[in-house]
Amino acid sequence: MPMANRASKPATYDDILKLPDHVVGEILEGELFVSPRPAPPHAHATSVIGADVLGPFHRTPGGPGGPGGWWILDEPELHLRSDVLVPDLAGWRRERMPTLPTTAAFELAPDWACEVTSPSTVRIDRSRKMRIYRREKVAHLWLVDPLARLLEVFRLEDSRWFQVEAYGEDTPEKVRVEPFDAIELELSRWWVPEPATPESR
Image 1 (cartoon, rainbow, N blue to C red):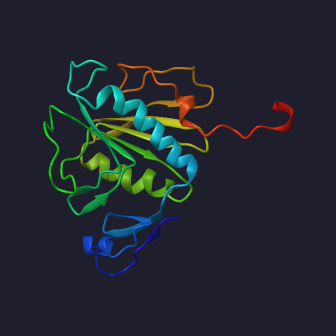
Image 2: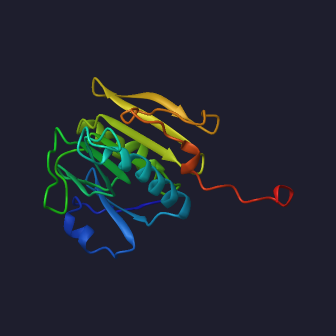
């Protein structure tokens, strides 16, 4: 479980700067949360999702190789009012952010965020971070559970999260998932293969 700062005064960015490099620090609703670096199933899912989405979309619109029109980034640091979030992946439509900023952090909320949950982060992903994304009008949110092999797709409608779909192990081989439904995604690529049993060798 991420360690929370229960100090009487709100956490500041200086608290994050004091953390060691092997952890991730976020400030959520005034509290500092410190999470370990992800385990292999989490890292694998994040890497493959990034590759699947980045290739066709992280490019100028209308160019060869995909629809384009997005900036897709791994673990960008978001400074949203007094909150500091580090989603696993986030994307901005280039019509809203024509060029990438030169600063280390982003003050413009993304159009899409992806949180790959783990047992240590799922509680804050589903509570505090979803509230902050909703407040900042992030239009699309994916919650990916690599252990349960589950993708939950949310869209913001009238300042509320609406679950568009949930894709589990019974998902068809390829699906189209908003906001990247211009291409097909093969979700089975996202999950670490089960270890081979003696009978399957």
